Length: 215
Image (cartoon, rainbow, N blue to C red):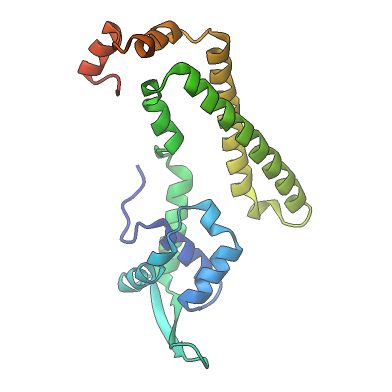
């Protein structure tokens, strides 16, 4: 399990990785993170940026170096990373790279309760998902290939990973869709009967009572 950190918001990791280059104020941090696509790499809630920056300062990972006032703008506080911040950034990255953690994708949540819908509807919805995934994967492949012509691979490995995850999801979803469409999914008759009669099969009811199946 990854360590519990004093600032555990992933936006904190993005901030530290941004200011490691040079001191800057939060607005500049946000602009640079957007330009680098950090809101695609992690769940970034921009409204919490100033709170995260203040928490990083509170725990000694950032420190104030200056305040500037530009014409037409409020006073802006400049922050720089501390030695403790550099150590925290390096340790955080090591931890995330080496320690696998269970993540909870929304698709997995939907699959866990998909029996609530009739199998024909689930088949139709998965077919739509496959179409969208195929278009997305094709676009990502094209974009990555173009970027690799100009950008060192070191700065694109997260895009490679995201593409690999999408390709794996597409392959698995296609497989499930094929089973449903061909009628080879093992529990299809039971599932269909549930929705046609409105009565939950005894096998499912028993499992649900034991907590093995979610309604």
